Length: 380
Image (cartoon, rainbow, N blue to C red):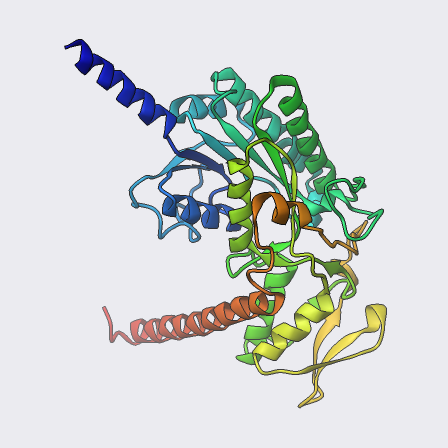
């Protein structure tokens, strides 16, 4: 009887030690949805935080709802009590804090909200872990950003490059970065920063410049849009595929010791190059003429102006040269930053948006036909 009791205790200990329970903030976003898929494939119980909304549809994770081991909970990054209650109930072994107001331009319009979520929200997560007594058992990943480098002081940027944030978003994220390091040192928490350079996908929001470009190229090709307006065409970015980047997030928390890593491809391109390639994949070859605000992208075949620069899309302070050095992540984590090339990334996005525009057009025709039938009394 004693032996049986010991076996049960050992069994419970093994279960506790082998728990793989992840809590993802920002699970409805681009990165959160890909990360959830990755962790589910690795046998995790995945818990995600969602905000209450009158619209109960989450397109990026709709295919996961109802899947075993996938759970959603109402909470908010501005509500510390809700976060403490949720962390205490779930008792995660890993937390991925991806939630943020992540649009740089919007941060100039809503700086207070950006600071509350992107800066103090990180503190609330860290304090929730401490309050629930999970300091020794829960590992924390904080999604940091290449915007920290801002007015860059060296190229390319690595983990030792000085920060010079150049937007309210970047300033808020800098607080998040340093509070993670402080809690790691002060409370010996396994808390890490991933300094993510620009990472895109077919799930990227339509207000971000890359998705804006691929969607416009698809719409122009299919006759649904006349022209694309952009800001600084010469801005340089290090663009990678979000699906590859979430793998590095996971690897960071599997490392033997907590540390901070640059997540980038090490390859740089301009906004102009991105647009040229996107239009190429829909069968339109662009020729660029003019300089600065007068530069235009012209269809070589027709001579029609398809891309123009609009000062409305210039930022009050603009970061123009982001280029990451992923050497540390490659060496220490065994991560491959070039699994998906720049060309493959753009094609993935363009192909997806070509299908989306075609499907939207088909749906619009169905709606028009249905309205016509209803008006004529054919369908009742």
